Image (cartoon, rainbow, N blue to C red; front, side, top):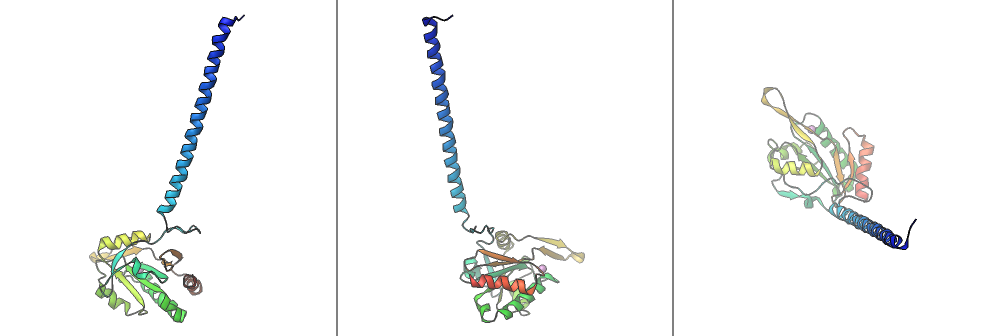
Length: 218
Ligand code: NI
């Protein structure tokens, strides 16, 4: 049994609970909205922070580097912009993969004819301790004269390898000598330095050539 005296404070209490509940809902909704806007903002900033990610979802490969070419000149990523570029990382003491790749790249340049002059082919050493500009110059004499070779300090080389997502490590051999394990893909970029495709070691001639032609056609 309820009387008016008891009922009125009860209704007031109920109203206070309802208002408090609505206020809480409003706070939660506002908070969720603010978080959602924050996420959108973060996403936008994230995209701006990675300008090399293309709409096709190609991962960012390549980036700033500063090295010395086989003529002893300082070069950067900008040196090779304006033309598509095929980058290959290796070392002159390599018994098979590097000479084979550079021989095949020389063949591709020959196949491309006049178009070859619109393509940079860059060999970057992962063994700067032994691969001086002078040694690289001598090494390149076995391949197409348009191929450029780069070296630098171990730190400069490490930064370039990291930018191109190239893995490498020193492997000691008998007699205190060493070999270098290294990623053997050729990285093909467009004239702006953005990744177009990768040419794998032992990829057939026609496929490799098609990839270079694709970069030249962009
Ligand atoms: Ni090699």
